[in-house]
Image 1 (cartoon, rainbow, N blue to C red):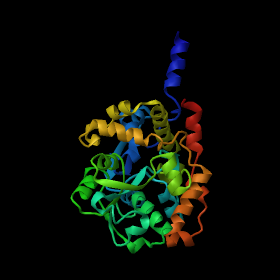
Image 2: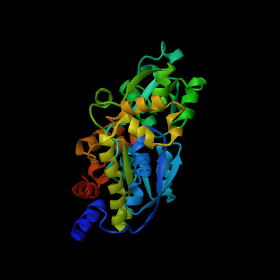
Image 3: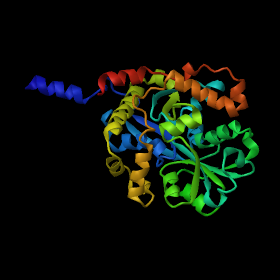
Image 4: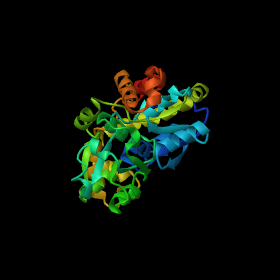
Length: 334
């Protein structure tokens, strides 16, 4: 009986074989309530960080570019943010790497205000418009730049304003402050349900992502400085274990079960709508936590399309990914 109890205890501890070197972790995110970052919210709410011996303090910024700035400035240890940021930082000589993929599709939709839909029917019609994004320079901004570039426009052919990722983004459209919005759910699903917008492009589904990008392109990842991983390998392993366990839970959970786990304010006042938004985004989330070589290359090609600095840079996408931690998590967490 004692041997059985010991075996069960060992199994329950999962991959946490070594205590984290740094138990108190500051994590940055740009819009925690967005479904783009659902795996982060669930990891915290399911108790997976604590199970791995971590105390994670989450700093919620308006957009991903701001959480990246916090990492570079040293006010956070790690970030859940868009994979593209690791490529851009490598191009700038900053050795920042991703260690687990949380989203395999961006989950971003570009929509126009309904009363402007007769004039703005394609990305080419965005010239001279005012477009809301979570924060300037964030992935929601990049996707519009990419679509504009494909339509023959330059990044400065439209103006961009940061509107956040939740109720503030909804309000910006409803008050007529912007002509179009590039954002994530549940905000986009809410605006669609009320008929306030017409969607031009979306990357929430396999079909939509293939139409826009040509195939899967890693979105939310956990990224950090390579030197942080070198100094704190057990801490990074614990973080990856926690997220990996969440991805496994998410793969089997129903939209209703997921909705019950998040803070009620994330529902934007309508639980049924939130459940529907989760259902719309289930294809977004990573199944294996791996940023594949194909996805890395697609992200680099994506950036080169609209970013002159990236087009001129020589970046090896392999430098942006450290797969050791996910591989170890996969061995022990089933």
